[in-house]
Image (cartoon, rainbow, N blue to C red):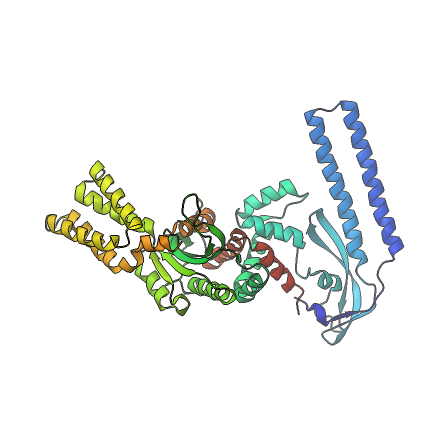
Length: 466
């Protein structure tokens, strides 16, 4: 990409009078076409088909007039000069060349002056540099539409929807290039993008508790011979309100999302999550910082080793604990029996109401374990639950956590895993490369946590930055 600040142009733009004549001509033509359409509508009578035809015709005529005016203004910005200075070298005018740019008004044919040195090796097109269009096919507005839509749709679907919205739709190939360009930029500039987000669209200043979660979700990867499935990671950093007076539960005020394609141990995901926690922690204090995750040792080991979580409240996802208890109830009382259901419900209630419930539950489970036949599957289920709950007993003080105004479930991160990763990367027939999937996730996370505008502004600034 050419450096705009190293480009010096001294020249004469097209005269304002000449440009005004061109614009007036486009407006006169548009007015004539509108008059003809109105006359036609009046002669045929207002009917649903006639109204639709009028709307379509007006849209097409407006786009054609806008395209003509747009090209005239753009070309008028190209200074007429015999020489420019670029990177300390004098380059001379060598001719004009036409390039196609896909604009919101249609496919434009833009004539631009180009310059080269005596050796004529490579050339510089000042207009492209001035407009941030060096090496680009789509104008920024169209490119943003493509990137934004690609967070939710495949390239072919983006082509179809943009064909309904614009006079000319970009091809799937051009759409894939946009996903690559924007996704690569967001990946390569993670730190600077996050700094800009923290400065211009930080997490809400409301709320009293910061809650952090991360989890894995399987995604299909493109193998040499067949599809392989590996675990991608999703992280969430959220600010919660005080418990509601209606149901006594806190609610999410604002969230940031992060997602990474499969990597052993999720180090890159954790790095982004921790950086976000550190950034928001440097700006304000919270009553509590909590980490809510499932029972994987790898997750808890990572959390406990990280200094940013020193003093944090660690919570074993209540839903995960409830599932384990449900399996225990079936093992003790019989799968699907009313007694198993009632016992399970009672124990879940006690865990949320009584601060010493986990210790009493462990004693109860040890007793049932001894009563079940040696070597039976049922006894093994209870034994594993005892081991699991004993290891996590500090993270299962649910009544205490509720009294602190904290959520106790990781439903939000599980929802994020489904909404951010599964809904986009696990559609029928999809297979991904690590880079390709990451490009999409980089875009999708910024859309989903409502920081897309800042991310896009950072990307656009890079197109003309020094």
